[in-house]
Image (cartoon, rainbow, N blue to C red; front, side, top):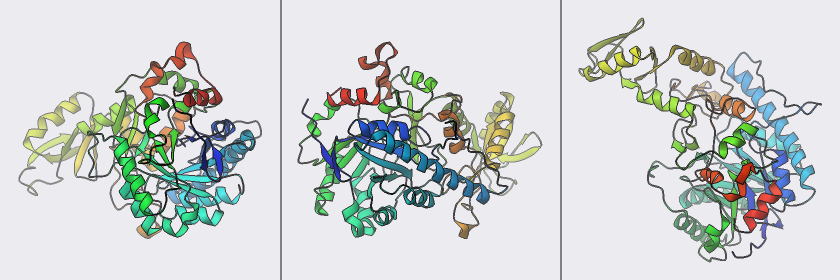
Length: 467
């Protein structure tokens, strides 16, 4: 294994090892501070970050507003307060070593005010901003105004080219690096384009080499690329080091830091990671963001798969479409479906899926009564955690009356509730459990034998050695 040389990231020479900023409460000040203290780049997730009371207990994010816009304002304030607390904790734990970055999703609700609110109160404590999930054109301007470096997360050279030409070239001195997040390997939300086949993964090397070629054309030879997704044993990536086609390179770890002593996720989640097998991670499109994402295929994802499978096209009246003239009655509701679909509908109802729910695409799904009630409650309680949500039809755009203009989609789910619940000890089976596609390595990597859970420092030493 080649020696892992330090790299200038956010104004300081550090180990080219970056902690991935993992959504709600899966990366916090404790984990980020420990990663920086070990000489790398720690990343505080500022997506609905936890805040603590005087006793060190997590302050529950309870919403009191009667309207979605009122609850949205509460969500933003929770995000700012929690982000400030986590950044300060990370800075204290790091002890002046490494670098501290913060991570936000551009498509999260209130991304700009949360960023501004956190950065205004943490001057000198944050070295960089990592941001993906969308096309964050304003990221460069916000970073430059606060004199911190920015790190866009992209999944193709084309995406970076668009961002650079439209916005980033105006603030190029603050571009600290470009995070290439592999859309077939990374956990969480993935940047698959409509032109790419989710079932036909492409090798990351040529895609990153193409990104480097484009960056060099823009005069960005000095800017590192951060490889994210699928990185486990660094020895497997040795040919990327000192490689002119790749250039300056760092590696981001999202999944492996979950199983450390400093990781904030519950012990049950850590235990489950060691029992995963290859193929247990599903690349799916049930997220209310509309993006593809990767997570453990548990009862929640199976339920979402079932909703979409128990689905038929319908019309509300006969005679509208000659293909939809077969009447079917579900409870007190009458629909008109294709003749071939009536038997399926009656079969689902007989199996206990007796509640029909309309989708924005003129289809019906069939679910159990309790499930239907839960879906409607979650939609009603929406607090606008996304800039646009297909599950609840919320949009943070006041010009559209805070609506996407489409009906709420019961084929999706409330992602904020699910991620909050799993991060704070709720069921691992009925909530979203993000993980990268290499998570099955926990079960076979001898480093984790006999239930061993390393500290962040021990993990980084292992990674540096190539393992």
